[in-house]
Amino acid sequence: MRLVAWAVPLSVLPSSIWRLPAAFDRGIGVGERLYVVFLSVLSEAVAFTAFGLIARWGEVFPRWVPVLHGRRVPPMAALVPAGIGAAALTLLWTVLALVTQVMGTTIRGDDLPADFPSEAGGWGSAWFYVCYTPLTLWGPLLAVLTVAYARRRRVTAAGACGA
View 1 (cartoon, rainbow, N blue to C red):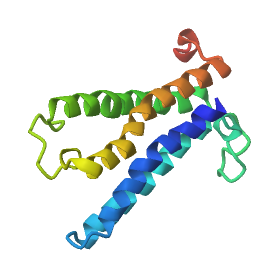
View 2 (cartoon, helix red, strand yellow; view 1 turned 90 degrees about the vertical axis):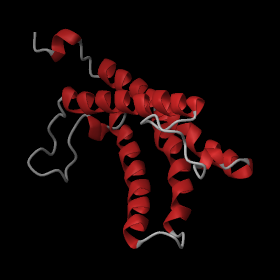
View 3 (cartoon, helix red, strand yellow; view 1 turned 120 degrees about the horizontal axis):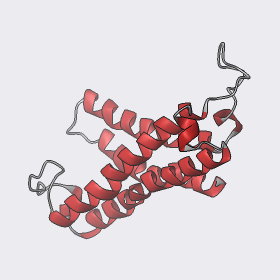
């Protein structure tokens, strides 16, 4: 599972790096620059939380957490956000992104603008696909880690419902 956990932030990294040059483009304002950098950093930070599903800090609160340090992490406190995240990421990046690319539309159903990176053609489009294709793995990889965490912590449907 350690390799799967490493694969999560590594699947997000290419798209995060791909966005960064846009933050230094002359045609955008300070707010947009900050947004692009923030989005890249936040994406990586959220992807890194997948390690909590394999690390000790995903089972026992670390010393630096006030009040809770040393106590066991309730399995559902990790499983609920991880499961919702896995489902949402799979829907967004694995299903919607692929369907919209095949159909040549945005998620809203509008035609892709001519300046959209996948429409540029040549090396620009190739680089876009190389950097964004790994994102299709984020949700499924997180789902694998979530199931493994549930099995390791022995969470069953009956146990999760309190029965």
